[in-house]
Image 1 (tube, rainbow, N blue to C red):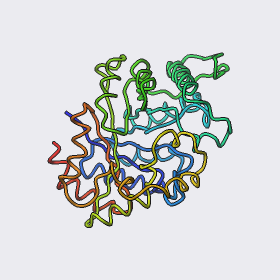
Image 2: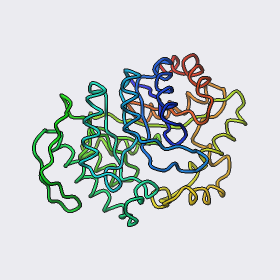
Image 3: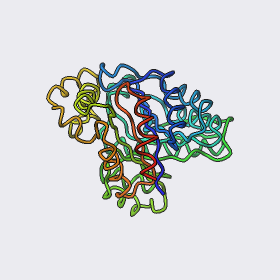
Image 4: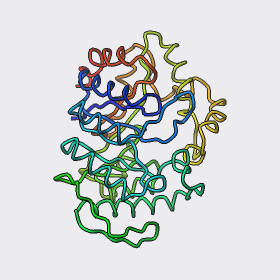
Length: 317
């Protein structure tokens, strides 16, 4: 059966609010959590971007739900050795309920320490090497590594969980999905693509979990919900590679000026009709996703959790 989780938006909410929402999600009947890992929000209007590893530590004490980063980029901004330590500590704090979601990232977050942004092909190579390093460190051995992209000198992790955290990989193109099938313990996607799920399974991911996520906007008035989506997430309507290449929120704001309200909200169910929300979520279920994560856009969090607890989650199950 498909599991349903809540997607915590680090771009919209401060750390204390994220912990509060995690509690509300568990009370409403959600079974797991996603949390985004950013240095910058996509837009200044979103307004937040706390350090995800501190927030995970707080959530570990506040709830009993599994937590997945959606997603961490262990390539440039933070060396994979440090991500390995953070993930291991998170796995210990959660009692084994932590999954490390990884991806090739965006210049928006990574350029802050190196203005050179590697092309996609190189970032895939970097990610494969980073995952190799992290898994070696999770063995508890003393690790020295001289690789194409990373060097590690006599590093050893002393705080380790009983079982290494699973690595789930995000991918949106053929090469990245195939790499995920080959090296990852699970696959992450933010669109209901049956084609990508099948490609992941065919590339070595058969029997491994597939997670998907979408943003929604519950409100009593559908038109108001659409305006909220357009105000906070017009970036959903930006097509192509821009999301990986632009370095600053203001660049996304410039592009977002060309995104209509309809384009911004196209993939996000809006308003108070449970059938609209159920239809969008069932697209992921029908595409073969094992876990589906839902994020509420905007400030009406209590109303959203009440709506999903009463009108949506029971009907999904």
